[in-house]
Image 1 (cartoon, rainbow, N blue to C red):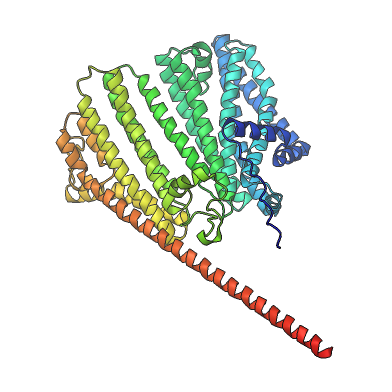
Image 2 (image 1 turned 90 degrees about the vertical axis):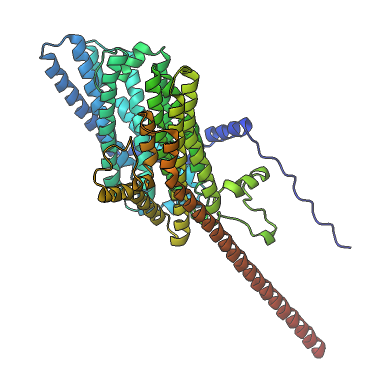
Length: 583
């Protein structure tokens, strides 16, 4: 009698929810990231890092002392001189951060590739995500030490007065926020470029330009805050005084604490998620992290839209601001449409149906239907893109309408702004889904995510501009007053809903005329449906080809096994016959 087959080992259900989070934190504290440990040891053991500390501290000190001496020589009060020294210190520290940190972070992944040690990191069993996060935390920790080393220089401001230690603490929090985004951007550039020199050349100017634009914007917002809130400090770091003086006010807390924290977390998360996707092998899932990020981003848009509109007191201003929020949200939908256009036709690591292995074996059973519907792969990702695009567009249009109806119940022009928001929603969703479907179809046809994105973006720009240029050629004066009448050719541009919304807000258009003006955008919806159907059909055909190829390979393998078994049987029979003849 043959022995009974052994029983399979008992399966232990994987922890979920809070238990899974607790287990991850315990494992992280028990087993620190080896990349982080290695990078920190290499940084602190090199003399170059120590020299950079000396040079950076000396540079900032010279600039601050010189600026303070120039300010003190004038007729300014000591408190004003202290504020100038304070602003000079943090502006110089921001300059050092924007110039050096991204360039250093841009060498993290490319350095491993050029030294040919990145493959050994993957062979060690560490995931690409753990490698990227280790590189990010190590670079962030090292430059945090640089900022700490600069701290004694700001003590010059206390000699003149005008600031408190809380101003310094708040300013340092702002620097750490900027440092997080700069390091994450450098790591993202390093993950996508093959050369360290090219990565540095790309990362440093981009970060420096972003710092200049951000500093100028902050200075402008500071002037607005002085008029609205009555804050006394000028300069890009005016928010330190506003937070210290008005921390208990909900508008200050929301705009200067909650909103910046959310934006920094989301931008840093986005850069690191794209870094992991860039270094992830082709056979792995590259889109799930970005999809989770997009869901959180869409939820944040709903909350930010509600908070911003709640700060406005006048009904007319709130209604106009709702149109601005809707227009910005439509631009965000296009960015999401192009973000997920780099998906291959089939999801990675899908086991064949005849093998007995479950598809997406790494996912829980309850998540497999959702993964098949919205998970990796061109067709599921296109469906997911449509969901998040509609959700983002709804948040950018429904939230302003709901806030206006809730806070301004006696507003007489509700219907006019509701129709304006509805036109922006319908026109924006139709044109965005067309671009998303076009990019997904191009990705399958061209087999290149970069080419698909570039071509889809070019088509989008052409669709924006070409109808307006054609209208100018036909009738040169027809675009003078678009808020009063949208010409026929201009209605084909995705910008037409914005023109119609402006006409409704200015009381130049009726509801019927508004919907008639955006009716040509139904062509985009039709084109999106056609391209979507072509994408789904192409994916089904590719899946059938892959399954047929696997079936042929399995049949050939079975034939080879049968042939080997037959030859082995004939060999054994001939051996036995030879032994019998010899006996």
